[in-house]
Length: 511
Image 1 (cartoon, rainbow, N blue to C red):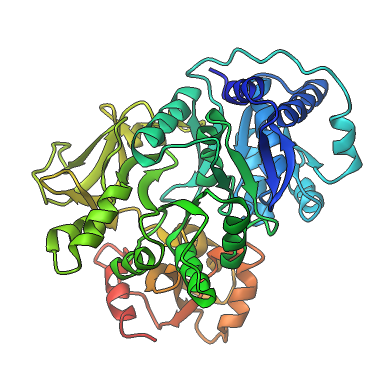
Image 2 (tube, helix red, strand yellow; image 1 turned 135 degrees about the vertical axis):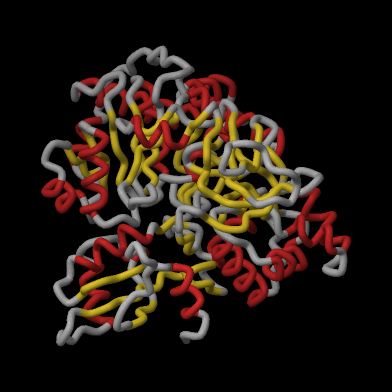
């Protein structure tokens, strides 16, 4: 099924309902939303884009982001949303790897990206060329996309730091939607879905549930997250629903407390993407009440592994911090989503008993088709029908899953995955760096921050500022280390492997 069917259906059923908003200002009804997507679809066909072609988006959040995605699906092409926080060099790698024929960008990056990705046509969405592309033309017929076709190519870094393209089909997206509506939250036309987190990731995936119900789609005027702006939108629009990383929730609560707000106008906050400390969620619920739902998922099975429901939050808060069972559940990531199975497996692939730690695995219709052009990585990730997540956790007797560690060494900072290898590789291109190992350090604001343990070349002088500037020429700003530890050597085992566990132990004493 073509994902654009849900827009078509909404436009036919509720043509006059408000659909797209820039801040609190309506910019398109559902009929207008469909018309814009159809006109852009016609323009894409005119440019020779057809079924199966990859079309990328390297854009900050904006209402036209949704229009572009719908137009891409309309003609049976594959959308390749690229994290706007990435360095243009990193974005260019994704364009090349995916074989994207076209990339929508904005004026800030279009020129630089075009020079880095010569095989992809980069189109500035703020230019006259884009206006010409969507000139009046009848929309083409909706392409009969099959359930197992690739619709969304989601790039997520692997353990080596090289981005991998997760192939998501219409069937995967449909399973995600049904799981959301069954376990996470009911959706109605009165709701306003706010895109405060990047639309290239989870926030963008949630568009479908709200399209199905003819709800409002709101992009903050800032294009991102600001606590005061969210509270203002809640007061003006009401029934706000949005996805937030734990660091965003902490900022929202701080803004609400500063202005004496209790979150009026906010209906649901779905959080995930990083560790939420018990004290923080209790504090948030004490101020905002029963507005929170936690999800645990990965790009490989989007937003659908487990859910800690609104009711579970309420029960834990009512029981109080003295109730050990409910405290453990509030610190967990909930129970298996209705659309999938979750298991904790040992090294032999057998299910472990309750409370035993092992690798978390999931199977069900939301699990990806595989990795784009990477059969080896697909075979390593999906075994005997199970997706091995690389995360370590334990299931209790009632099926609540608690995360204990990440076997892939990923650092989650502000809800965004940062892979040490790619930061290490960037630092090692500086001539003053002999060795480096990158680890995460717990941080009250960000969940974790990136710390680089650096061994400089003998006799060479280098400082934090120099390496920071170097990183900004190689990788995205958010990936660069926030702290450097200077060492004479790195701890290694007998085989020369760096002992990150020893570095983490030593880091606890470093301020």
